[in-house]
Structures are given as structure tokens and as C-alpha cells.
Amino acid sequence: MVCAGGCFGIAAIYPIARALKQAGNRVLTLIDVKASYLFYWEDKLKKVSDRLFVSARDSRYDSKEYIPYKLDSLLKAEKKIDRVVAIGCTYLMYRCAEATRPAGVKTMVSLNPIMVDGTGMCGACRVTADGKTKFACVDGPDFDGHTIDWPELFSRRKSYFDDEVKSLCAFERERFP
Image 1 (spheres, rainbow, N blue to C red):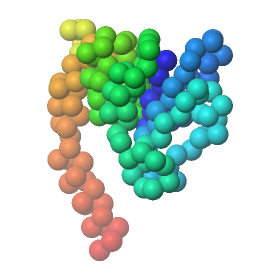
Image 2 (image 1 turned 45 degrees about the vertical axis):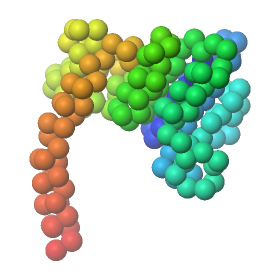
Image 3 (image 1 turned 135 degrees about the vertical axis):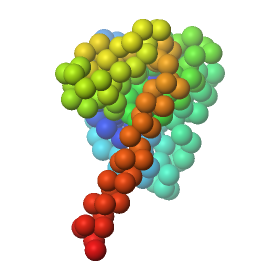
Image 4 (image 1 turned 90 degrees about the vertical axis):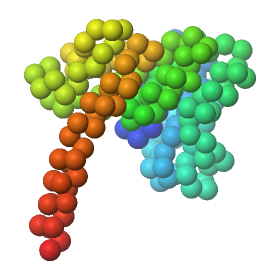
């Protein structure tokens, strides 16, 4: 079993990795952080992982390799990986799903980052999974990463980008005249 996490996904994969380990699985954990000071719960993750790989852009850890690349090399080196759980930004989950697709390793992703209200009312978390319209907040948030229409998801994520930038600029002008 591989648990891959970045950013808020570090906390989200911890109970999953712990439960997998308690169930007798071999657990490989991949963590991606922009800087080592952003990596929390290292001690907890070490306790529930057979191997812990950390990718950071600074010099504290050996690897600066983005974890989907590490996942790809693990898929080639390990005898058998049965499942991958990836939680973090949408790009990280997408890249993990694409890394495991050729090997046919089931990859679960958590689409929490696309949710707004969590009730199914706003539609912001609408996603196509397995050719069907789903809502991450009521039908998920966990989905098989190989069934997600990632290009559509990324397109939808950009729909308010210009408005968000304008809002941020207006906020900055107000706050720092």
C-alpha cells in the first residue's frame, strides 16, 4: 500500500496509513512539501510506515523529486503495490493517478480541494467520474483516480481564476494603499 500526501493531505493520509498498518499491510508513505518546515507529523508517519519518502525543495531531505516520479520508480522497483491513496492538491492526485494507470494499480483520490459548501447545493465540486456527473461533497470525496475526467476538472477549477485575481488585487490595494 502506498499513501501519498502533500499539504493538507499529510494529515488526511495519517489515519489511513495507520489503519492500513494495523490491518497488517506493508505501508510506503510519500510526502511532498515545498519546504521542510511545512512537514508536520513526521514522527507519527514514521511509526505507521514501513518506509517514508519525503520530497522537499530545500536541503533537509535527500529528495527534491516530485512524489509522482518517486511513485513511478516505486511501481517499477517494488514486487507488488496493491493500492495507492493520494490526498493533496488536485495536480498531485492527478499525477499519482496517471503514474499508476499503466500498471493498473487502483488509485484512490480525495477531491476535498474542489468542495465549497459540502452540501451539494453550489455545484462547485461537480466532477465527471466514470462518465457520470458526481458531486465530491455528496458522492465522494473519495474516487478512483482513473475514472476522473481530469481535463474537465482542471478546466472547471480555472473558471473563477480571473475574478479571484481581481479580488485579491483589490484587497491588496485596500489593505496596502
